[in-house]
Picture (tube, rainbow, N blue to C red):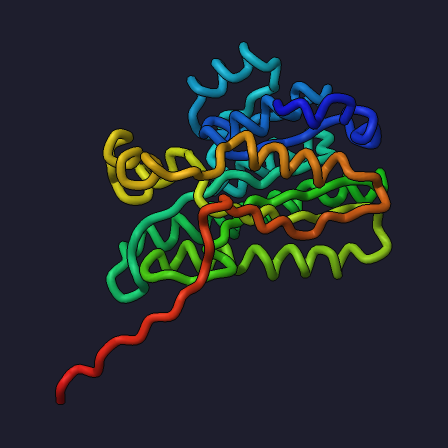
Length: 258
């Protein structure tokens, strides 16, 4: 964890525990490490039980091997936990536009990127409301704010997260429960190799070699900033981009002959 977070524990004194989904990935591991170093009890959730056990031995986190797309499994586990901070980090992506995307991949992205986020929030909120404290952080993507060709389901689900976070803040009006969306640009994780079916070496060469991208620890620092802010402060959105990356741009296609 970066030195800027020395002494942050006192700012988090309202919170005792955090649930991090997608904990076995590089981003999830960085989040678990950051929260564990801050003194919170960390519940780490992922399908990868072997990776979770290694993470637990390294950080002391409590592990839950579960598929977050399985709502019944979540309903059996999450209400038994006291979750003061929920970090919706798990995500999946697949290439494809609406007209040529794989149907199963479309469903998986809706299930993991959106449906699970809504159900996890539903399951932790009663306890947060009763205790009058809590924080829901969701890792979205610049893809939810800026469009580029392909990955239609990914764009759509991440855009829906922004609306969902706004709606949570409206529905929780008057409650001391904060809602934060973290929207990163390119981060050096395994997401590209998984989304495009590349081996790690090909993904490294195509997306990271020669580029100054974000690191998972940068995202973890942003999350800790939001969670560690004074209770009077709700950091509602952090748009976190590499210095050398910009969204947008204008293209125009030539008309095809009739």
